[in-house]
Image (cartoon, rainbow, N blue to C red; front, top):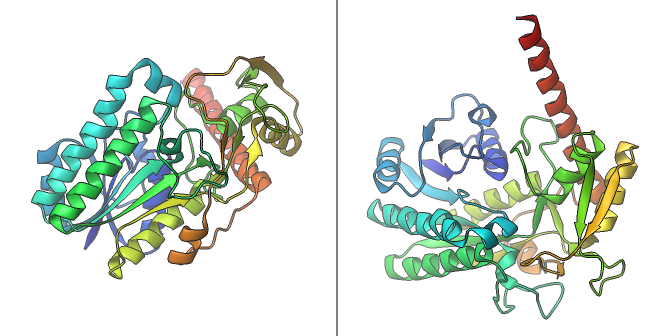
Length: 337
């Protein structure tokens, strides 16, 4: 049987596909390549270029490839963008998930893993944040994911589907072997911006808010290495295959780092200084977000391998330097042609 990965050519999705392929799984991908890259897929993995909300496409792929499980990554993920374009986020995230679920039900899919976010919690009352914390999103992005979670719960109850909702904290880093990583232009991930500054691609890095009631005044985040996150999804798939009940789990390490600490880690690892500009708080930003990961570690056969900010930053920097070398090589070829 085959696993369908939506958004499988994107940042997290490509790491997921790589992990599944290396484990000997049969995988098929649907991706519209708006932020993904077909070159990131392992050789032999079929790619269908299209929208995960296209029910006819999804049903055809499920039938053609004998799909029995879906891992859904496709969607938009930038909080400030969602504040400017809420309807776009409800379309790309909530409506797409609705259509994908409808296709899954019609096709008899009974295992579904959903890529959610810690943004559903808003500013939590308790840190580390347990899965039982109230859900009070501060952005359309967070609401679009929460609405999708609710739909999935209701669909599963009505149709006997088992699911795992994985609420990501801050995903960062790149494949330790340098095969895939974050390559989307204009990415807003903190570590991505920091390594771009360290490699001279940005003149500065903006820090939004230095007056939060935190030790250094900047926001605090729980980073999780993208490869460890992919393995958490593999563990979720094994759990559901083993007749595990539907579950909602945090994905992080349970350790917070401030924005300024993260910037200093990149400076230290790269051995390069770069400018930092301080700006006002942004609407929708959450002050402190650290995961309570007790349920994840208790339920799943999952042990993180890269649970260290310096390691995450090292892999992110190595990937960024590889991208720069490849772009330089392409530029030289164009000049000599």
